[in-house]
Image (spheres, rainbow, N blue to C red):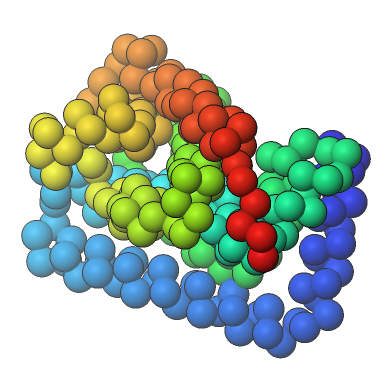
Length: 258
């Protein structure tokens, strides 16, 4: 942990050397997500509800997924850009160092500019939490924290899975964006609106619904059992196959010779 904090300190200092660039990039990230927020606002202004969910409840979905994705993209960005690391031979240098490869890739890239999206998620939470109609208790606040943290873990797992597949393909597989960037876009609304088939896939294959939809039912009073409240924890085993693909790819890795 001490070594990771040293890496973090290095990244912070290096990015703060170019403050204007960092601030403009953060602003760009904020405005990109703000455009998505406007689309939610315009649609809810027209229809008022989506499958029985109010505007403020939809905003809870939006902020939860946006914050989870922003945290994952900020701290696990090295896996999202792993194809470039393999292609330019940088990964060969990592394998020569006396630290775990997965730790070094994790610490190789920390994107502070994603704080722009994180700030927007916080602002949406500040608006939606007191207006959502949820009777907030310590238990419900804990469920919301689990939604964000487990969501960040799931998105990080998807980045690790993407990196693991790069061992076999060298170049990145764009279809993975369906579940990373696409998952962020799908998560603007309760995932049940996309139909039962999609909900099953996002429950049992890529468990986005486990940290977004099912605990939302608990927060909004549509479900009262503890199983819905603890659903975010059920998403964590998804990290095991992601790590397994990484380990399998690592064992079969052959240098590109770059």
